[in-house]
Image (cartoon, helix red, strand yellow):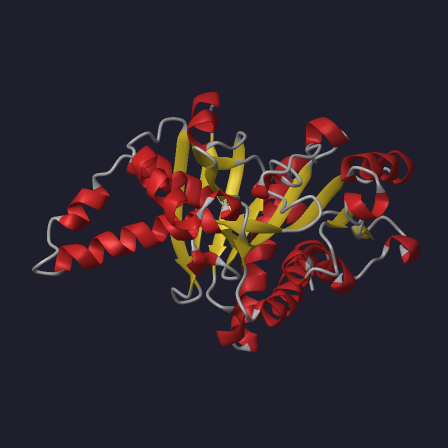
Length: 333
Protein backbone atom coordinates (compact mmCIF):
# COMPACT_ATOMS: atom_id res chain seq x y z
CA UNK A 1 0.00 0.00 0.00
CA UNK A 2 3.03 2.21 0.03
CA UNK A 3 6.33 2.41 -1.74
CA UNK A 4 7.99 -0.66 -0.27
CA UNK A 5 5.08 -2.11 1.68
CA UNK A 6 4.27 -2.53 5.31
CA UNK A 7 6.98 -3.67 7.62
CA UNK A 8 6.80 -6.61 9.90
CA UNK A 9 8.13 -7.14 13.36
CA UNK A 10 9.69 -9.49 12.59
CA UNK A 11 9.61 -12.30 10.07
CA UNK A 12 6.56 -13.07 8.02
CA UNK A 13 3.63 -15.32 8.42
CA UNK A 14 1.20 -16.27 5.73
CA UNK A 15 -0.93 -19.09 4.43
CA UNK A 16 0.08 -19.36 0.81
CA UNK A 17 -2.78 -20.54 -1.35
CA UNK A 18 -2.47 -19.73 -5.00
CA UNK A 19 -2.00 -16.01 -5.44
CA UNK A 20 -3.42 -15.06 -2.06
CA UNK A 21 -1.57 -14.83 1.22
CA UNK A 22 -3.22 -14.23 4.56
CA UNK A 23 -0.55 -12.10 6.17
CA UNK A 24 -0.07 -11.04 9.74
CA UNK A 25 2.81 -9.40 11.54
CA UNK A 26 1.40 -10.37 14.94
CA UNK A 27 2.88 -13.38 16.70
CA UNK A 28 -0.39 -13.58 18.64
CA UNK A 29 -2.31 -14.31 15.44
CA UNK A 30 0.34 -16.68 14.11
CA UNK A 31 0.23 -18.57 17.38
CA UNK A 32 -3.54 -18.91 17.10
CA UNK A 33 -3.06 -20.76 13.82
CA UNK A 34 -0.50 -23.06 15.39
CA UNK A 35 -2.69 -23.71 18.42
CA UNK A 36 -5.69 -24.53 16.26
CA UNK A 37 -3.57 -27.14 14.55
CA UNK A 38 -2.36 -28.60 17.82
CA UNK A 39 1.30 -27.88 17.08
CA UNK A 40 2.57 -25.82 19.98
CA UNK A 41 5.94 -27.60 20.13
CA UNK A 42 8.74 -25.14 20.72
CA UNK A 43 6.33 -22.32 21.61
CA UNK A 44 5.55 -21.20 25.16
CA UNK A 45 2.57 -18.92 25.79
CA UNK A 46 1.59 -16.92 28.87
CA UNK A 47 -1.59 -14.85 29.12
CA UNK A 48 -2.69 -12.44 31.83
CA UNK A 49 -4.58 -9.18 32.45
CA UNK A 50 -3.58 -5.93 34.10
CA UNK A 51 -5.25 -2.74 35.29
CA UNK A 52 -8.47 -4.31 36.45
CA UNK A 53 -8.68 -6.61 33.46
CA UNK A 54 -8.76 -3.81 30.89
CA UNK A 55 -5.40 -4.65 29.30
CA UNK A 56 -4.89 -8.20 28.02
CA UNK A 57 -1.28 -9.32 27.63
CA UNK A 58 0.05 -12.35 25.79
CA UNK A 59 3.68 -13.38 25.76
CA UNK A 60 4.70 -15.80 23.02
CA UNK A 61 8.18 -17.26 23.33
CA UNK A 62 9.53 -19.09 20.32
CA UNK A 63 12.15 -21.33 21.89
CA UNK A 64 13.33 -23.59 19.10
CA UNK A 65 13.82 -23.76 15.36
CA UNK A 66 10.89 -26.14 15.25
CA UNK A 67 8.71 -23.53 16.90
CA UNK A 68 10.05 -20.84 14.57
CA UNK A 69 9.08 -22.92 11.54
CA UNK A 70 5.65 -23.64 12.99
CA UNK A 71 4.83 -20.02 13.77
CA UNK A 72 6.67 -18.49 10.83
CA UNK A 73 8.71 -16.13 13.00
CA UNK A 74 12.26 -16.05 14.39
CA UNK A 75 13.13 -17.35 17.82
CA UNK A 76 12.59 -14.80 20.56
CA UNK A 77 9.97 -13.11 22.74
CA UNK A 78 6.81 -11.43 21.44
CA UNK A 79 4.75 -9.43 23.96
CA UNK A 80 1.31 -8.27 22.83
CA UNK A 81 -0.87 -5.69 24.59
CA UNK A 82 -4.53 -5.71 23.57
CA UNK A 83 -5.89 -2.37 24.68
CA UNK A 84 -9.04 -1.53 22.75
CA UNK A 85 -9.62 1.48 20.50
CA UNK A 86 -7.52 4.51 21.54
CA UNK A 87 -10.40 6.88 20.81
CA UNK A 88 -12.53 5.08 23.39
CA UNK A 89 -9.92 5.44 26.14
CA UNK A 90 -9.53 8.20 28.69
CA UNK A 91 -6.19 9.76 29.59
CA UNK A 92 -5.82 7.58 32.66
CA UNK A 93 -6.22 4.39 30.66
CA UNK A 94 -3.67 5.50 28.09
CA UNK A 95 -1.30 6.16 30.99
CA UNK A 96 -1.81 2.58 32.14
CA UNK A 97 -1.05 1.29 28.64
CA UNK A 98 2.15 3.37 28.57
CA UNK A 99 3.15 1.88 31.94
CA UNK A 100 2.65 -1.68 30.68
CA UNK A 101 4.61 -0.95 27.53
CA UNK A 102 7.40 0.59 29.62
CA UNK A 103 7.54 -2.51 31.81
CA UNK A 104 7.88 -4.72 28.75
CA UNK A 105 10.56 -2.50 27.24
CA UNK A 106 12.57 -2.48 30.47
CA UNK A 107 12.41 -6.25 30.71
CA UNK A 108 13.44 -6.97 27.13
CA UNK A 109 16.06 -4.21 27.11
CA UNK A 110 17.52 -5.50 30.37
CA UNK A 111 17.74 -8.98 28.89
CA UNK A 112 19.31 -7.73 25.65
CA UNK A 113 21.83 -5.53 27.46
CA UNK A 114 22.43 -8.10 30.21
CA UNK A 115 21.34 -5.63 32.88
CA UNK A 116 18.91 -6.21 35.71
CA UNK A 117 15.82 -4.01 35.58
CA UNK A 118 16.46 -2.75 39.11
CA UNK A 119 19.78 -1.27 37.96
CA UNK A 120 18.17 0.95 35.38
CA UNK A 121 20.12 1.90 32.30
CA UNK A 122 22.74 4.49 33.34
CA UNK A 123 24.91 5.58 30.45
CA UNK A 124 23.07 3.42 27.92
CA UNK A 125 22.64 5.00 24.49
CA UNK A 126 19.34 4.11 22.82
CA UNK A 127 18.84 4.81 19.12
CA UNK A 128 15.11 5.24 18.42
CA UNK A 129 14.14 4.64 14.78
CA UNK A 130 10.83 5.77 13.32
CA UNK A 131 10.13 3.57 10.31
CA UNK A 132 7.56 4.44 7.69
CA UNK A 133 6.31 7.24 5.49
CA UNK A 134 5.05 10.34 7.33
CA UNK A 135 2.94 11.29 4.29
CA UNK A 136 0.91 8.06 4.31
CA UNK A 137 -1.27 8.03 7.42
CA UNK A 138 -1.41 4.25 8.10
CA UNK A 139 2.37 4.15 7.67
CA UNK A 140 3.19 7.24 9.72
CA UNK A 141 3.27 5.73 13.22
CA UNK A 142 7.06 5.47 13.43
CA UNK A 143 7.80 9.05 12.34
CA UNK A 144 5.05 10.41 14.61
CA UNK A 145 6.46 8.53 17.63
CA UNK A 146 9.91 9.97 16.91
CA UNK A 147 8.36 13.44 16.77
CA UNK A 148 7.18 12.98 20.37
CA UNK A 149 10.33 11.42 21.87
CA UNK A 150 12.58 13.48 24.11
CA UNK A 151 15.99 13.34 22.41
CA UNK A 152 18.81 13.88 24.93
CA UNK A 153 22.07 12.73 23.34
CA UNK A 154 23.14 16.25 22.38
CA UNK A 155 22.55 17.62 25.90
CA UNK A 156 23.64 14.67 28.07
CA UNK A 157 26.10 15.84 30.73
CA UNK A 158 27.08 12.65 32.52
CA UNK A 159 26.65 8.91 32.41
CA UNK A 160 24.18 8.62 35.27
CA UNK A 161 21.16 8.54 32.95
CA UNK A 162 20.44 6.82 29.64
CA UNK A 163 20.46 8.95 26.51
CA UNK A 164 18.25 8.70 23.45
CA UNK A 165 19.07 9.71 19.91
CA UNK A 166 16.62 9.35 17.06
CA UNK A 167 16.29 9.05 13.30
CA UNK A 168 13.47 8.88 10.77
CA UNK A 169 15.29 7.22 7.86
CA UNK A 170 12.46 7.68 5.38
CA UNK A 171 11.51 5.10 2.80
CA UNK A 172 13.48 3.65 -0.05
CA UNK A 173 11.49 5.51 -2.69
CA UNK A 174 12.57 8.76 -1.03
CA UNK A 175 16.21 7.97 -0.24
CA UNK A 176 17.22 5.23 -2.66
CA UNK A 177 18.82 3.45 0.29
CA UNK A 178 17.87 0.47 2.40
CA UNK A 179 17.02 1.39 5.98
CA UNK A 180 19.62 -1.14 7.16
CA UNK A 181 22.30 0.68 5.14
CA UNK A 182 21.41 4.00 6.74
CA UNK A 183 21.33 2.56 10.25
CA UNK A 184 24.64 0.74 9.89
CA UNK A 185 26.32 4.07 9.07
CA UNK A 186 24.66 5.80 12.04
CA UNK A 187 25.57 2.97 14.39
CA UNK A 188 29.18 2.98 13.21
CA UNK A 189 29.50 6.73 13.90
CA UNK A 190 27.43 7.16 17.08
CA UNK A 191 27.89 3.73 18.71
CA UNK A 192 24.50 3.21 20.41
CA UNK A 193 23.95 0.21 22.67
CA UNK A 194 20.40 -0.61 21.62
CA UNK A 195 17.98 0.12 18.77
CA UNK A 196 14.24 0.55 19.32
CA UNK A 197 12.43 0.51 15.97
CA UNK A 198 8.80 1.65 15.79
CA UNK A 199 6.65 0.73 12.82
CA UNK A 200 3.14 0.11 11.54
CA UNK A 201 2.18 -3.53 10.97
CA UNK A 202 -0.33 -5.65 9.08
CA UNK A 203 -2.89 -7.79 10.92
CA UNK A 204 -5.15 -10.61 9.86
CA UNK A 205 -8.12 -9.57 12.01
CA UNK A 206 -9.88 -6.24 11.55
CA UNK A 207 -10.62 -6.02 15.27
CA UNK A 208 -6.90 -5.75 16.05
CA UNK A 209 -6.30 -2.67 13.90
CA UNK A 210 -5.14 0.11 16.19
CA UNK A 211 -6.04 -1.88 19.29
CA UNK A 212 -2.91 -4.01 19.67
CA UNK A 213 0.72 -3.15 20.46
CA UNK A 214 3.41 -5.75 19.82
CA UNK A 215 6.86 -5.62 21.38
CA UNK A 216 9.58 -8.06 20.37
CA UNK A 217 13.31 -8.58 20.84
CA UNK A 218 13.83 -10.20 17.43
CA UNK A 219 14.13 -7.06 15.34
CA UNK A 220 12.13 -6.09 12.30
CA UNK A 221 11.97 -6.94 8.60
CA UNK A 222 10.85 -3.95 6.49
CA UNK A 223 8.28 -4.61 3.80
CA UNK A 224 7.50 -8.23 4.51
CA UNK A 225 4.10 -7.51 6.02
CA UNK A 226 2.67 -6.85 2.57
CA UNK A 227 5.00 -9.05 0.58
CA UNK A 228 7.92 -6.69 -0.07
CA UNK A 229 11.18 -7.85 1.43
CA UNK A 230 13.98 -5.58 2.61
CA UNK A 231 17.12 -6.13 4.62
CA UNK A 232 16.20 -7.04 8.18
CA UNK A 233 16.95 -4.78 11.12
CA UNK A 234 18.23 -7.36 13.58
CA UNK A 235 21.17 -7.86 15.92
CA UNK A 236 22.78 -9.99 13.22
CA UNK A 237 22.56 -7.25 10.56
CA UNK A 238 23.19 -4.18 12.76
CA UNK A 239 25.58 -5.59 15.35
CA UNK A 240 23.60 -4.44 18.40
CA UNK A 241 20.32 -5.62 19.98
CA UNK A 242 17.12 -4.47 18.28
CA UNK A 243 13.73 -4.16 19.95
CA UNK A 244 10.69 -3.53 17.77
CA UNK A 245 7.41 -1.85 18.72
CA UNK A 246 4.56 -2.08 16.26
CA UNK A 247 0.83 -1.49 15.87
CA UNK A 248 -1.27 -3.05 13.08
CA UNK A 249 -2.88 -0.38 10.94
CA UNK A 250 -3.88 -2.37 7.82
CA UNK A 251 -5.47 -5.71 7.00
CA UNK A 252 -5.29 -7.50 3.67
CA UNK A 253 -8.24 -8.20 1.38
CA UNK A 254 -7.48 -11.93 1.47
CA UNK A 255 -7.80 -11.92 5.26
CA UNK A 256 -11.12 -10.09 5.06
CA UNK A 257 -12.34 -12.58 2.49
CA UNK A 258 -11.36 -15.52 4.66
CA UNK A 259 -13.20 -14.03 7.64
CA UNK A 260 -16.21 -13.41 5.40
CA UNK A 261 -16.31 -17.04 4.32
CA UNK A 262 -16.28 -18.12 7.97
CA UNK A 263 -19.05 -15.63 8.83
CA UNK A 264 -21.20 -16.76 5.90
CA UNK A 265 -20.77 -20.38 6.94
CA UNK A 266 -21.94 -19.58 10.47
CA UNK A 267 -25.02 -17.72 9.19
CA UNK A 268 -25.93 -20.52 6.81
CA UNK A 269 -25.77 -23.08 9.59
CA UNK A 270 -28.34 -21.11 11.59
CA UNK A 271 -30.92 -21.09 8.80
CA UNK A 272 -33.40 -23.90 8.48
CA UNK A 273 -33.27 -24.02 4.70
CA UNK A 274 -29.50 -23.50 4.46
CA UNK A 275 -28.34 -25.78 7.27
CA UNK A 276 -25.65 -28.03 5.91
CA UNK A 277 -24.36 -25.46 3.44
CA UNK A 278 -22.43 -23.76 6.25
CA UNK A 279 -20.83 -27.04 7.22
CA UNK A 280 -19.95 -27.58 3.57
CA UNK A 281 -18.12 -24.24 3.49
CA UNK A 282 -16.39 -24.89 6.79
CA UNK A 283 -15.25 -28.30 5.62
CA UNK A 284 -13.84 -26.99 2.38
CA UNK A 285 -10.10 -27.33 2.22
CA UNK A 286 -7.96 -24.21 2.17
CA UNK A 287 -7.31 -24.59 -1.55
CA UNK A 288 -11.02 -24.80 -2.30
CA UNK A 289 -11.75 -21.77 -0.12
CA UNK A 290 -9.11 -19.75 -1.90
CA UNK A 291 -10.42 -20.73 -5.31
CA UNK A 292 -13.79 -19.41 -4.16
CA UNK A 293 -12.16 -16.22 -2.90
CA UNK A 294 -10.39 -15.71 -6.23
CA UNK A 295 -13.66 -16.07 -8.09
CA UNK A 296 -15.28 -13.46 -5.85
CA UNK A 297 -12.44 -10.96 -5.57
CA UNK A 298 -10.30 -11.57 -8.60
CA UNK A 299 -6.50 -11.75 -8.44
CA UNK A 300 -6.11 -8.00 -8.95
CA UNK A 301 -7.38 -7.44 -5.40
CA UNK A 302 -4.93 -9.83 -3.74
CA UNK A 303 -2.61 -6.93 -2.85
CA UNK A 304 -5.34 -4.62 -1.56
CA UNK A 305 -4.96 -3.46 2.06
CA UNK A 306 -7.65 -1.75 4.11
CA UNK A 307 -7.33 0.70 6.99
CA UNK A 308 -10.00 2.10 9.40
CA UNK A 309 -11.65 5.47 8.65
CA UNK A 310 -10.40 6.94 11.95
CA UNK A 311 -6.79 5.90 11.38
CA UNK A 312 -5.49 9.49 11.62
CA UNK A 313 -6.77 9.95 15.17
CA UNK A 314 -5.73 6.40 16.10
CA UNK A 315 -2.15 6.91 14.95
CA UNK A 316 -1.98 10.28 16.68
CA UNK A 317 -3.08 8.88 20.04
CA UNK A 318 -0.94 5.76 19.78
CA UNK A 319 2.14 7.78 18.89
CA UNK A 320 1.83 9.63 22.20
CA UNK A 321 1.22 6.41 24.14
CA UNK A 322 4.24 4.64 22.64
CA UNK A 323 6.59 7.60 23.06
CA UNK A 324 5.45 7.91 26.67
CA UNK A 325 6.17 4.21 27.20
CA UNK A 326 9.71 4.70 25.87
CA UNK A 327 10.22 7.72 28.15
CA UNK A 328 9.09 5.80 31.21
CA UNK A 329 11.16 2.75 30.34
CA UNK A 330 14.44 4.66 30.15
CA UNK A 331 13.95 8.03 31.81
CA UNK A 332 11.62 6.79 34.53
CA UNK A 333 9.12 9.60 33.86
